[in-house]
Length: 434
Image (tube, rainbow, N blue to C red; front, side, top):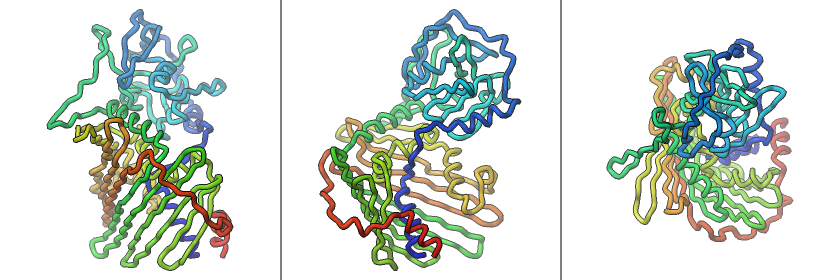
């Protein structure tokens, strides 16, 4: 049983940075749910008009190139979804038999002629104030309202109604810090992310602390988890990845130390682990290259900073051409993440929103980059406080990661007897049935 507990613990350590692996198939479950509810279907659209004006529009600072006049319906302006996807570089799918438009690998699901949509796994209204507003098809082209793009999806559509000239974003500077709206923050984040994904050789040093306190006014339950580690990657003809993480978990005065090493070879991730009461524990997992890279790269910015999580940001010029970006996180999304964590406590997301004295603060991510947008360091802070039924719960998370030796070969060939490593599925089955 100790081995099994250690397995679960090590898996938690591996995924501490929030990385995940997604299937390639597009999941349209939410869109099908919307279609199944006939009350979402909008049948009368007799007042759809196409103006003679071809507006000049920016989306997230990029020109939206359209050839048709502007589409108007129910006093709302619509833009074509195909051109929106092309402008932002988003994958676009259309499922004709179901009449569903899918953007960004399923993150946005838009059933045609319906007043509901799915955005990042949540079913939302196209327009909360008007049930007649829906995703449209006009002349074999699908359209979506501008207000929905701005207010719900979070992209920034801009144009001047009087002159049809594009309004440029104006950066507000105060004390050397430039404030960024959501679209500007996302644009900056994407540039950093693109550079970080192309880094093939690097050493990443990590340290952090997670503190959890539960109190009923009489007794206290404290859990403290300290994390330190190093990840080294060499991605070339042969992928070499090595990481070493050390954690110390203290629960109710009892302390457990875990040292974990991982390396990747021939389509498998090999994990060696030592804990306070287990001398050595070895197991292996079948992984493809993408999965292994995501697992090893604990500073995978693209996996952590999703578009629905960023609300706004700021940038500050530092010495030597470096810049410090601060990305403020969406509180509702933070609540959702906490909700996932709180399932073990039988608290759902809606329950969390109704808790007494609920507060989330210090929800931000700081990234320092050089003049070429290469990430140098990464910090994240998260603090939460809430109470329910006389119990107060407080959680604080602080993580710091630093890039070193970027572009240099950092991993040496690992020679070890691989026969000593047991398949993780066999270990889990063996320990569960024991």
